[in-house]
Image (cartoon, rainbow, N blue to C red; front, side, top):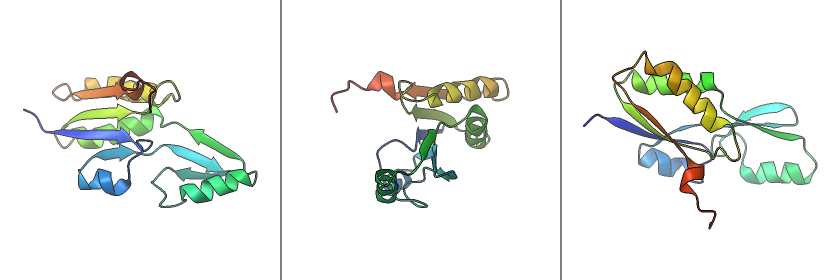
Length: 130
C-alpha cells in the first residue's frame, strides 16, 4: 500500500489543531475585507468574530476559490514526497474550488503517473441534514 496524505479545504469546519494532530493537510481559501486580501487560515490573521463584526458594520467582503495553479503547487509538493493524495473539497454547489482541484489533477497526472490524486466533492457526501 502506498503512503498517502489526507487533505481538505480550510472550509472543513474543524480546527487547525484537530487537523494538525491527525496530520491532515489543508489548502486555504481566500477572502477580502475592505479590499485587503486574507487567506482563510483558521483565524490566525483574522478571527471569525472580527469578520462577522466587520460585516455587521457594513464592511465590503468577498470570497474567492483556490485557483488551479495554487492546487497544482499544493498537490505537487505532496506528490514529490512520493505520496498519493485523498482530498475532500468544499462543495461544488457553493464554489468552483472542486473544479480547480480537478484541473490541477489533470495537469499533474502525466508528470506523476505512478501517483494517485483522488478528489471528493463534499456535495456528494452531504445529505443536507446538518
